[in-house]
Image (tube, helix red, strand yellow):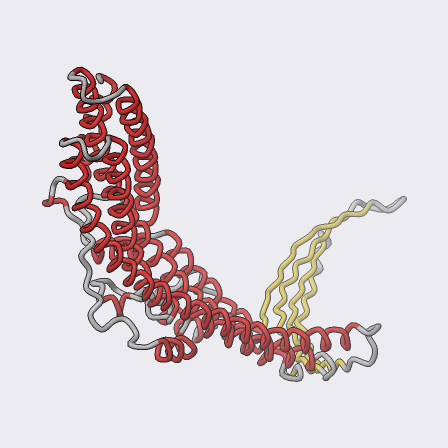
Length: 455
């Protein structure tokens, strides 16, 4: 009994610690806002957009001139046989200029591919936001669910301990049997094991919450009003997802990138015209006092026409065409996956609603059964085993109700994510929406060799 008393005390301390301090209560919106502003997954996706945008500047550089400077200084000496020792030196300074004037539109194709790649990264950011927000929701309601299960199973331990005490009292009075006591103790041991499993699940949920939100949970509440966020029908949800889901938009942008890859591969068959120019200044001297200097320059147009490259150009074009077809097939696959996700989320939501109704009725009925069975046991019409079985069914029904409530809320957010609507705007979060549009616009206009950019 001392052991069970310690377990009950631990249960009470854990539940009080989880449910206390409403002053530190954190609503779901507050948790979502904290995660949105601080989660490293979202920050990483945002930085990926900026990194991808730099590909635009690098592609545009193919149309701009390349200018370089060179300088050198050197000395020499000689000691001819029978002659005098002499020294000399020279300096040179040059400026080189080169620019591709025409490359069969390869540069334009590269710029389009870079822009499409940046667009893919932007949609990947939106998808990452959805994934993080949904993970926060799952962790949030998992903590609430597991906290309630810990409290329920702690109460269940207390109930079975009371049944053990009652069975032992009736045995002493000659009204019960040792079998009744053993059955009660077996159920009590099972209740302790179930409680420990609930505590372990709660600790896992708390760790998940801290990972996604950034701090430990405190004072969570399962009250959340979706309002008009959820789609009104499965058809409207599917239609919205096909037009707005970031994963599908990303797949369509990938088609653009693949088309640009085809254009780039085709340009390999065309000519390239380049301008190459340079200015050089040299000066040389010797210890005899002589000095000479020269300034010169050159300019030329260079035309390159590919004729044969061992089949590499043809293979490159075929590969690019296959990649474009594959991107279109991948987009169809993404569309089908999103449709499946919407239908699955919609069905889960409807099923969870039905489960809540069923579990609520089951809890009410089993509560009456437990109370009636205890009364009948006390007058000898039922056995201790009947009471234990009735309590087990009541506990199962209560756990089912707790899980169904959590599942329904998560299913609602899963439906928003499946439709592509799980974002700060839809949820009404008080945060500045992450965007790299300003950085992209700045990169589009940069031609200088800047080491850093301000948006």
